[in-house]
Length: 356
Image (cartoon, rainbow, N blue to C red; front, side):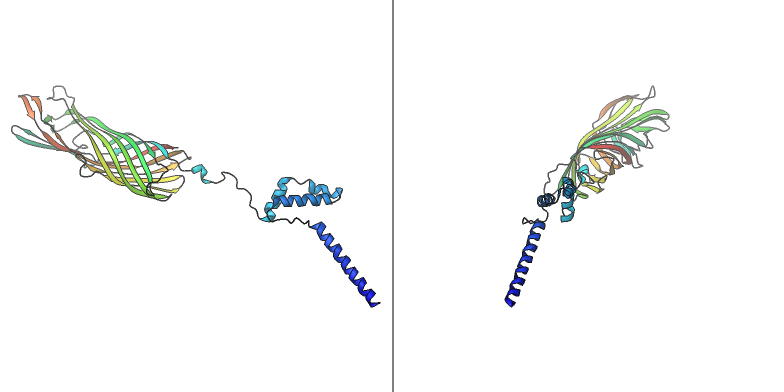
């Protein structure tokens, strides 16, 4: 009797275990779902839907594939794709060429002027003058400035190269009556003489600056080749004035600038820049300093506005050969001449740029 009861209990336990295993096999297929596997999750959903009665399988079957993808991404921790271009830096990717143009104004400081020495048969004479007081030049001159900046992508010794070409012109002229005698290159302009004066400057620059730093701040030395032309013209407009009626000095020259160059970009839309250079001792008679500080604000990736200030301190020593002039007493040889022209000044500039 005891053996019979034992056998019944064993059979009951065995049958229960079989039914339990069978139920688990129906609920969980043998192909286990791997984490992050959207294919297995979809297969499982399809098998489950097929196993259900027809009236219960339609809701699961009506789910679209995007819903399944959303379930797999949220439940298994897979991040969704980031919208292309939303807040990305591709819209402000670095450019390598920039064309700029501006209008500049520059004054003549009180240190501007000239000196001229020449010799007569009776002895040598030296005359000095000031552009803003002794000559009728206006204090402010105005002119255009254009250029192109190239920043190649390739670095040299870890430095970003900055190469630019620039052309600018600045003119000053005026006419007025002078109320005192004035001598220039041996010609004396009498009281109340109508005198016209012109000071024209043309400057072509080709520069290179390697800059070290990061995306926000870079600095390095610069070397600039310049071709500078300066014309000084004085014209006596009064009829019957002693000849010559016009005197001009043209001073073209090739010179070099050595200095520092930096760029600072705190944000993508705003950039500050600056440069300062000096003419070395062998500058072909030129001495001086050229300094510029400016800022650029980019309305769009390719279009920007700019502004800043430029300071030029230039002095040119010159020598002119002797020349023969005719005065009331006859021809007279004047010269040779020697002296200098000095026209320091500072002023603002405003313009625009296009980069690509």
